[in-house]
Image 1 (tube, rainbow, N blue to C red):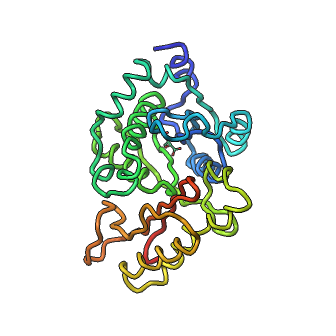
Image 2 (cartoon, helix red, strand yellow):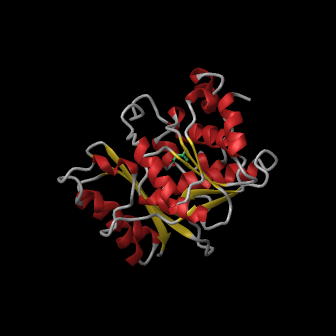
Length: 278
Ligand code: PAF
């Protein structure tokens, strides 16, 4: 064990509740930490901007970093341990080996088949599964709490834990609802990039989800979502109704469904989702 791992191990209780984050904490993260605190376990929050989930053309270098505020927010929300590892603690084999590991990792089907985030950000789930697996190995949590705003990510991590039951034994992946601004905008660390001009257009995904809820059929819902996103001058990556578990095409056998949206606004990616029909 490295000195940092030993220090972490010394601070950890038995099966803590764990909230992994990349920092730039907002009310959405606060709600996850509060949820964790309500479970009666020790609460561990990690802050690590994970390089392996960013493609070379993405915003790793400029991802918002607000460490001092994050520590204060996490403590106020109920964190007992705040784990801010250096890259070599998470990836002791170095960044090249980590990149290779992320590319080679065996992913659950929900990370490869739906054609949603997996199609738009091909490197993403490899990096997420690699880092979350490594953080789980270091923290050895009981409950692990994730926001449903990144719905596919939540489903992927849940599947990863189920599929590698021996490695991740004792971990329960819990999803918490998306936290929104009063006008409906889903909270996101990247919202700081919205300007007074783009803030109103960023409401498109939320309004599209509301419109989907009024539609009679999944097909009509998809058409309504596209119309609302167009009206907000957003470039649609997907706006679909899918099986809520597999995230694949819906069938008519009454299984739960989910509306899922990704769109860009002057280069800024917005994602949102909600149960369908609502
Ligand atoms: O959702 C996030 O903030 C990140 O993808 C996660 C799960 C912390 C992994 O880096």
